[in-house]
Image (cartoon, rainbow, N blue to C red):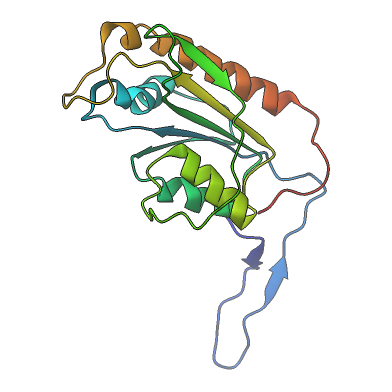
Length: 191
């Protein structure tokens, strides 16, 4: 449970006495918040890559949150609105490579252009809207995997993509570790 900056300091609300509020301050910066957004449709074969990675990530350092959103990107956008220092998006990505190839991609995020799809079903749309709303963190990376088949109906990953899961998990863990060990860059984050 996340506590807000405003805390009630050991007083009870009574009709004869107002509620006394205090502001908790600390000399330490707030812990970094990194979101690992795992997206994809588990009913479309290899498109379930993101959720499969989420299931394998296990325990991550303090400040790192795994968010498995399926195909509804609006939940990811809502978390970005809360604020974070970094975002790793995990998804099946067709780049014309051999199935099972894992990519680490620094996405080129397009300007927001009144996205008509309110489900924000693709990571590109989520990132674009986040950019337009001013809540896209400075550190964004996509860990993607070339699917064998992400269109046909059916559960389960192809053997090639299944074999890439551990590589993707290791890639996410390395990026998280790098970002957490970076000195804090330029000013407060948007929280």
